[in-house]
Image 1 (spheres, one colour):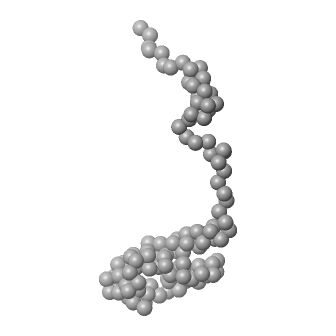
Image 2: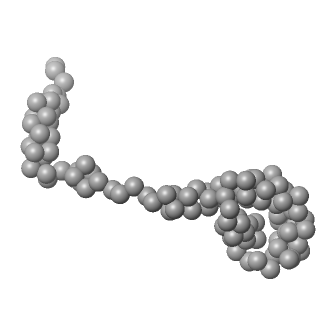
Image 3: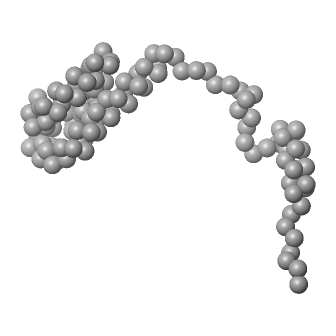
Length: 119
């Protein structure tokens, strides 16, 4: 007894060629509509935000208990003074805008509530 034969590979190739030729494929042809490169300013802002997020996330990871207790007591800034100072210095060595770093501190460490920092 022979096994049922699958679809003929030449039929698939012919169908793919027809689909590509008439533009009726499922996915758009991205080569036809090139995307503009991001502006250096936008790329710099995204890089600054990503680096700030990385540094602050590391603080949260390595000082988890202090973050939990600091949120509850509302004294995150004093409890995490040394790691925050070191992370801020590392951030400012690459980027000039400290406000981006501060926003990530509030967002990640303080859960969006700046009162939890206790400043």
